[in-house]
Length: 398
Image (tube, rainbow, N blue to C red; front, side, top):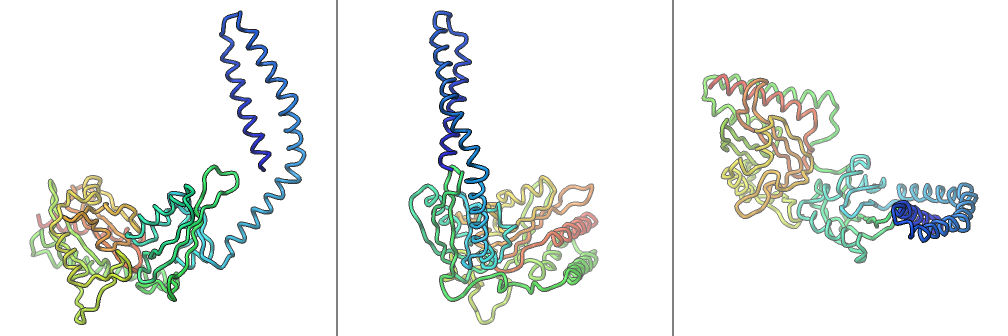
């Protein structure tokens, strides 16, 4: 393969020199003999050097080197997939190129879904910057690295990530081989991912959604004698805890104002048991009082500082994000911390409150955090339908 690469480089240089000779045809007549001598020299080089090497490589390649290389590559791919250690191959931006079977089971993420997405998207927010920095250092040849990270869906179990550089055959840049191992005796996997029981059938999931739609419809109809401003508040109460961990309501036409924020601080905890924070590591926890601070900060935030809310109000389309990559998508608090990080958001829905032909009357944002299952497309469609019902109720009471 090295001889083939060298021949390719020489051939590329020859093509460039021929292009220069073509451009030299416009030189004065008295200088043409020099150009002619150079052209003859290049022709001799092709006849005496390049052509014999091409014939030799052509006769040896298909039946010899190329065939052996293909067999070796197939063997290496099989070994990569079957090795019992969780291994991922990423580029210097941590985008996953390959994820073996053990890594898919270890992280609870399907290999087909992970490929083409940054590996940092499956880590806790606080670990992403450090992992990117270490991966870039390994890729540029600064040596192997190792660090402790936490999977977003299992923040209580630390994971040891070992990074080493690898130069794939025929590629100009180094890739990074990531080996994942549990840092303690707890091994996170897709089988023990916390959250609502995932063994529901599609029919049951549909029934649960229909029950939610029925509860929302009942609430909106019973709010006929109340003011327009109470409609989104009542709707938020239906969605809170049952459908989302956090519910944020912004209302208004010309200018949005924040009217309702319901978060995890509203969940009673008589024993004052710490709630896993999953923001800066499993050793740190966030108690209900700290969640109340996040709720208060969200309530004081100007909706104009939330890119997601502004885009939903302007475009009138629903946004569904799983493992949001941009921590600033919902703005920052007064201390400069992103709200998506403080609330440990793992998936979100941002839905405009609008009818088919009417203006946007507000924006409803829903967060799920921690190990809770992410919002699905079916849930997003149901929420889009309920948002239109909320907007109709608001318009009727206007």
